[in-house]
Length: 345
Ligand code: NCD
Image (cartoon, rainbow, N blue to C red; front, side, top):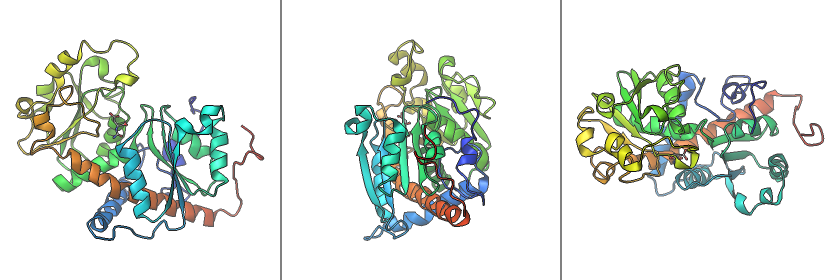
C-alpha cells in the first residue's frame, strides 16, 4: 500500500457528517466523547455475555466479512463471535485460498464481496494504511473496521485494553501506564498511546532499548525509558509487548536472552511498579522472552480478561459503525459510490 498523504486522514474518513463513527480505523484524533461512548457501549454488552442467551439482534440481516490477509487467532475469533452475538451473518474469507492468490487485485476482491451485499468488512493486512485505503474505496453503506494494519494501528485491541483498564482501575485520571518492549513495530502501542492520552491518563511511558523506540514517540506524548526498573517505578498498569521478529529487518537486538535479562518482566522486576499494578499483554505471549510465566499466570495478570473483553468491545464498535453508516446513507441523497464502472482503479 502506498502513502495517502494527499487523501483525507483516517481520523476524518472514519466519521460521518454528524461526527459519528462510520468506520473504525484508528484511535488517533477520536474525541473523548467517542472513546467514552465505545467503552460505555461495550460495558453494556458485558452483561449480555454472562446470560445463557448471549446474542442481541442489532446486526440481524447484516453481512459481515472477515478479511484477514495476515494471521490471527484472538482477533479473528473474537470478531467472529462479536458478529454472531450481534446476530449478523458472518463470512470468513480464507485469503490464502482466495482469488487474491490467483492474481486478482485487492479492489477486485472487494468489489466482488460488495456485490454479495456485504455490510461490513473487518480487515487485517500487513501493510500500514490498508484499512484506510479500503474505507475510501468501498460504497458508502459498507463499514470498514481495522483489525490491524502493518505497524500503523490496531484500534479495537487498544480499546479492549482501555476497557480492561477502566474496569480494573475505575478511571484514567491519575493513572500511570508503562508500555514495555518492541514499541517500534507495534501497531498496538501506537493505538494505545493515542487512546490513553485522550482518555486522560496522567502519564504514558514507553520502555525498551533505543533501537526499539520510535523516534517520534515523545511527540505522541509518551515518555521514553531505556531502563526497565526506572520506567516501572510507581506505575499502575504495565503493558508488555511481543518482540515482533517478523517485522524486524536488521539486527535490532543483541539476543533474546539479553533482551529478557534487561526487559523481561519477572516477579522481581514487577515489584518496582505500584503494588496493585495490573499486568497486560495483547497476546500472543512469549514466555521467557518478554514475560516470566509466574507473572503471566500470576495474581496481577489480567491477560485473559483482555481476551474476554475483546468480544463486547468489538460488538460495540461494530454496532456503532453500522448505525453511523445507516445515518449517513439516510442523509446522503446523492450517492457517491465508487464502483468499478464509475471509478476505474
Ligand atoms: C497483536 C497484533 O497482531 O498486532 N496481537 C493481537 O492482535 N492480539 C500483537 C502481536 O502480534 O504481538
